[in-house]
Image (cartoon, rainbow, N blue to C red; front, side, top):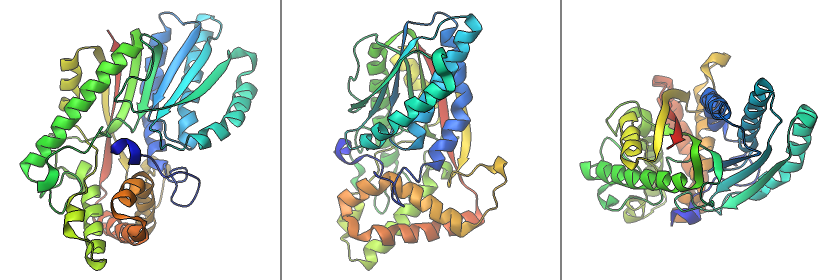
Length: 362
């Protein structure tokens, strides 16, 4: 089951998510203005005595608390403008049970200390709690949350779509996938995203807000390079290792990723059909596969980029791959993947496409 194997690599080792979340960091930075505008707009009405926030799919590492810090900063700016005392803050960090919550909890004392040093008495009391569980189930009491945030989590599905036996030699949607594969993935996304919206609509107060950022694609074609190429390269690497290691073909063909990268229209359609939220803003932006920011003057080195991309993808997919194939082929697999990525990036700078949306609960 996805709930048992979908989590980022724990700890702080070389292949941990803690040290390989630069893509997610860049995504949070690029989506920051949407989150800030959303919080400011919400606070422009009335600031509650206790501001309740949930971060869904919080994962672990330095990005987790940076989002919470941004939200608190934005609320405090609004308070200053309105000459309003700071509310208290109640923050819930949610992810699947396999998430490394202990890493987050160990960082909380220093987080509280730093917030106290920066904000002093301006900031009201803040409590942060972990909440293991799937966001495809109810997580919170009814009408209890002011803001829900999620970054790079909602593209993960509740399960691998059924009927993917025909997706031979692929681990996700690809140019060579039969039409039935695209339809199965889209239907699973529609079901899951609609359920996600229904559940959050019960938990968020009227006029509460939700900001989601997730992987997507720019065009309607579900096999476009901007959403599928990186997984095609991983599939190629896996097939090469499987041949060398004499892994049975049926074992390779039965592995598919529980993820979907929707286009803009697919997102809008589900939101409109579900009906609980008003879509206030939708933006698309691109991020390099290795998480570097083109505006920061990085010098491209294909081998360094290949290695970084391999570690980033490994930090996200290793638990799923190890659960299906075993750990013995991981180093070889991601070594080949790094080389394949480096070769590809030397010819074409393909990027991740991200979609960020801001919504208001009706």
